[in-house]
Image 1: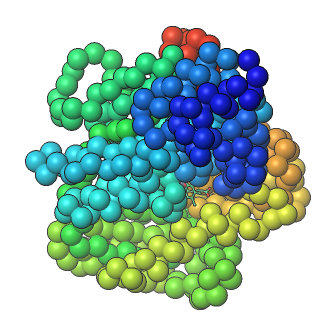
Image 2: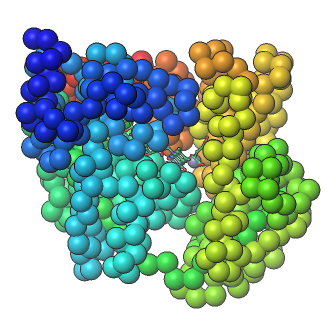
Length: 453
Ligand code: FAD
Ligand code: 2HG
Ligand code: ZN
């Protein structure tokens, strides 16, 4: 059957206006960073679960791969299609149901952004605590498929912790739906948990039932200069013990802050510090008092800037959140992005080793390091090497494994890291992954080329 016949059938299923080709499909074929790009037959935008099922069946019956795509903000090339595939965009599945005030749960479509879910929660005096800079584009389905982390993992966990149930379309078009919202429900395999972190390879998530957290209360944010990275593990340990209300404990280094300062055209609030942490504390009342008290017990800290109201807190967060967009503009190519987790007491040595090895093997390359210090999660970005120069990926990921770390803390494996999955997963684990993939998607229809080596 020809491409034209496939496109006609897809048009009959979802409406011709929702089958995009050519220029209209272009933005779906390159990732947010610009490092990964591909091609597709079409971008299809179904408007219901039944339409998603129809699209999957139409493609599967012709052996056409289906690449689920939400906000296309993923940082490992996982939503970038390969030639001959169809991108299944979930963006029209954006409905958000009422918040259940008794359980603090909400059901939303996979295409709702996490910013919209958070706004709906807020309007009902609840809160959706998974949050990060791409909040207005990243979708609920995409964040479940990647088990996204973000700023508040320290206290609220990753996306998986908030998923109560999902609805999904499997590779044969079958719909599995478990959105009842029962908190206790030990009735066999947890399909929702299986889809968390599955990166579009096991099913297309169409909706999810999410657990919310109680509303914010009072919030305070501080930027704190540290003497050096050697103190980080002690500082994190102290702050976690001193104030369990701390939700975010983020790391920035001087070179990243200087680049952000040029971009913002503003002076760094804690000038001269080589290492800066951002600490956010949320409590029913007196968040700033609790934060100042927790910080007071720390040795070896330098200048501190504290924000006690929303706008001031947002402007301190801007220093941390702007790193991704600023580094993406450094050039001459998009960055090679690494998202590793490490034992906290090994971070300083790891950073020194990465810097030394990159300088030795890639003279002129720049290493940018920031991340979620409280979670032991470093974002290592390297600018300079060409997009297809994988020797830099090999170097950083091998050093990560040697340091006892994980090659992906929160962004996933995607296309970017699948050949290095063995650094973090044993052959036996990878074989279980393959068995699951074969059982749920024997025709390899859903996002082939992603996650599995
Ligand atoms: P996409 O990029 O569209 O897809 C990501 C993966 O999920 C792909 O493999 C895709 O096939 C699959 N997928 C998408 N939707 C579905 C679905 N409905 N069913 C099945 N599979 C699906 N990530 C973090 O974890 N923490 C951060 O702090 C963070 N900060 C970021 C900041 C910026 C500025 C940017 C650009 C990205 C950031 N990210 C972060 C990465 C990214 O936003 C997350 O990975 C996010 O979860 C991707 O959501 P998305 O809707 O854009 O998914
Ligand atoms: C963040 O924490 C994101 O800001 C993006 O996970 C990290 O740009 C990156 O490497
Ligand atoms: Zn992150």
